[in-house]
Each structure stands twice: as C-alpha cells, then as structure tokens.
Image (cartoon, rainbow, N blue to C red):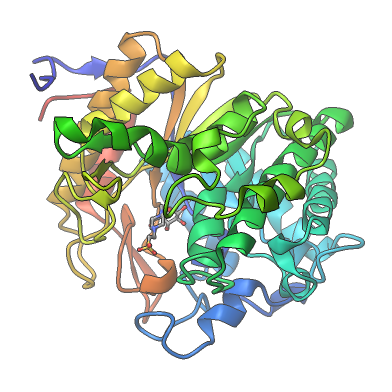
Length: 449
Ligand code: GBH
C-alpha cells in the first residue's frame, strides 16, 4: 500500500538545515578572471556538438560577479545554508603548487557575505571541473591525480580553517567516472571502461586522502562526500535477482569503500555491463592501505537523490516510474524514504544530508509558474520527514538548484532553478516554488497541500 501523508503539517527538527545548491562551472562564468585557467569542462564544451545548444559555462549565471545579489536572494528565502563548489582551476590554475590568492580572496568574501546573513557554507571541493593541466597529465586515469587533489584540498582547508564549513570532497564520483570517462557525455569525454574504473578508484582515493588531511590540519567544520544514490527495484517481482548487481554498481561501488572499507564483489567485472570489465585490472589499481584511507571516518554522508531505476529480466536498467523533462529522472518520492532507511540499516551510523534534489521545468522557456516543482519538492520533503520520524539522522536538505544554470550537456535548455535566470540580461526572477520553499523554511514544516 502506498504511504499517505498525515492531514496536518509534518514538522522538521528545530535545527534542521534548509539550503539550495549550485556548482562553480554551472553558475560562475568569468572563466578567465583573476588567473583562472581552463578546466576539462571549458575544453569539452568548446567541442562542436557535445552541448545541446552549443553553449559553454561562460557566462552561466555570472555568479562570480553577482554573488552579493544572489546572497540577498538567499536571505530573502530564509535559507540556512548555501551549497556551492570551489573551482580548483581558480585556486590552483595548473593543478599544483601555491594557491592563487586572488581566487581565495573571492571565496573568502563570498563565505563572509553568506555568514553575515546567517547562511552557512556547504562547500564542495570538486564538482567535475578538473584543471585541464591535470587532465593533460592523465587526469583520473593516473593515481597521482589523487595526490594533486589532496594538496588542493589542504590549501582550501587552511585558507578557511576558521570557518565552520560542511566540506564535501567530491560531487558524485560515479557521474564523473561513468558519464565523463565511460559514456563520453560529460568532460573529459572519454569512452573507456578501464579509464572509468581507474577514475572510480582514484577519485575515492582522492576523497580519502583529503579526509586524512582535513583531520591532520584541525580546521573547524565537518567533512563528507556527496554520492548520487539511486534505489533499484525489479520491474516485475520475478526480476528480483537483477537488483543486487545493478545496486552494486550504482550505489555500493561508492558506499562500501567509503563506509565499510571494501569494494562489492558484484560490481567488479562479473556481469555484462559491469564496471570495471577486468577484475585484475581493478585489483592492480589498488595498493595496500588504499581502502583504509578511503574509509577514513567521515562526519556526514551527503546524499543526492533524483529518483529511482528499474531492472528488467536481463539485468538491464528499465523504466518503472514517470520521468521529468530530464529523461533519466524517474520520479518516485518514496524512493527517498527507502534509500534513507536502507542507509541506516546497512551502514555504520553517520549523519545524513540530502545535498541535491530537484526537477527541471517542462520546457526551456523562462517561467516563474512551476507547480510541478512545488508538487515534486512537497512529496520529497514529506518522505524526508517520514524517515526522520522513524529515526533517520537526516540533518538538512538542499534543493538543486538555487538558480537556473548551465546544465552540462543540456546547456541552458534545462532549467532546474527555484529562481529563474534570463540569460540575456542575467535578471533573477523567483519562481512560485521559491516562495513556496520560503514558506516551508519559515514554518520548518511541510503541509499536505
Ligand atoms: C546532479 O547529477 C549534478 O550533481 C548536478 O551538477 C546537476 O546539475 C544535477 O544533478 C541535475 O542534473 O543520460 O547517461 O548522460 C544528477 C545525476 C547522473 C543525472 C548522470 C544525469 C546523466 C545520464 N546525474 N545523468 S546520461
């Protein structure tokens, strides 16, 4: 039987954090300002035919320049936190060596301006914008990239060591490894399952090394990693055998090493379409101690939930729920509840944050009329409240996204913002969902309708 929300409002815990999220390449623009060097996304987006509307992340939503206006918007919504990412190619343009002080000053001004409005910073260190110089040296195919990342992370921890930040080492290492290195639809645009496998291990190693540096450095704040997780259901009860292998690849390949210090056997080359294809090659990437480093305890797990997937009788992915304008997004709010309950059941206790959840507008036109987004968020907030009511240690919830922005291979044609952006004028126009979200935050509660 489907779950029904109670008639009255569902209250969230008193100190629950309501936020909105973005990432550097998707909102900043100013790609050549203040010493920034190209990232893999600048290079990739410049290739003909890879971005739907032929666009790039320049100027995106121009947030590098307009951050004060955006922070005023956030304050108007009553946000308790803003999740954004630092651009590695600003802070270390060549991917190594000393920090670019101008870039750190910029982020310091932003973090201080947020704090002035009582908005906490939740900072992702890597949201896919690898410095092109690091890619030229081999990128995530190379173990050394993990060491480069740890050095970059340490520069950031030191620069903001006084600030109580929720740090996230990586954003969705799965998406970056699979879509960027296996399917070729994201930067760096490779189609090589073995490199994708290396990108899995080396990103996870980078995460672990950064957590070690964070602990050793003694900065304020907390640290975790942002994983996009996707509950898998059989399209028919007789297909139940297909769930575990797909779940191993989509979820456990990242959850298990971080939270248990092991890789799931099922994900390593035993089935068609499993990654990596060659178990020996995957084993060869690993050195003694890697899994210990990767499983260095984190302070919170950042969960990014967009929907569910199904598995058919051949073990392949199939559609089991209605999609949004993003064809990959199969909408099932109860999947969030199932996921949160599962994390508590299967993994050591760790506080949880939902650091991304949202839906695009049905069309590419600027609109402020977005009842579909209100319905989507309401249903998901209810499932979050339901899980909290059953003891899940969920501490916060960030909507993707604050603003319409550069939606990767979709360019500017897919609008995910609570606030619309007119990309001709850079005017910000709050959608109906922004006002609705502000009322949820003010009440710290979600109502049935
Ligand atoms: C998040 O990824 C990202 O963190 C964020 O930057 C992004 O803007 C947001 O979602 C909205 O998309 O058709 O094979 O290329 C969400 C998970 C996984 C969704 C990869 C898109 C591409 C599938 N993403 N997927 S494919």
